[in-house]
Length: 118
Image (tube, rainbow, N blue to C red; front, side, top):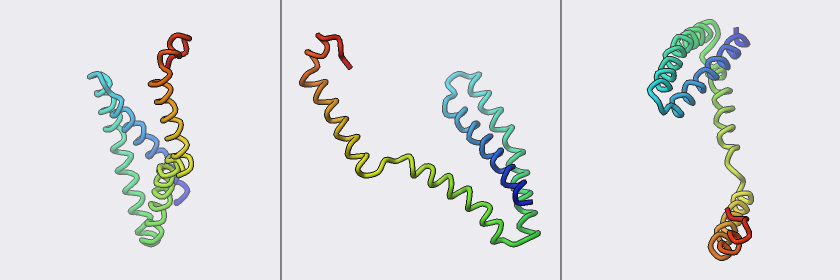
């Protein structure tokens, strides 16, 4: 039951991420309608997800249900945390941005004259 629930959860999560992305990028009425449809389409899958998770907890233990929820939750959390650059990388990005600003201010006219403007 656990492997099936994990694959089902992966599909529901992917569907949910697509619905959230559609809602974020919707600018026209038609796109907003499509995002609403995708969100409403995902709701029955979430209900089934929670129902089967309840069955799993009833058949085994609360601890296993918590583990089934916590493992993907930790994966999503650390995926978000790994997007941030390390301290040394952040310093380097800051230096690059400072150099870009210097070039645009101090050497902007010369770069534009040479055709290499930003």
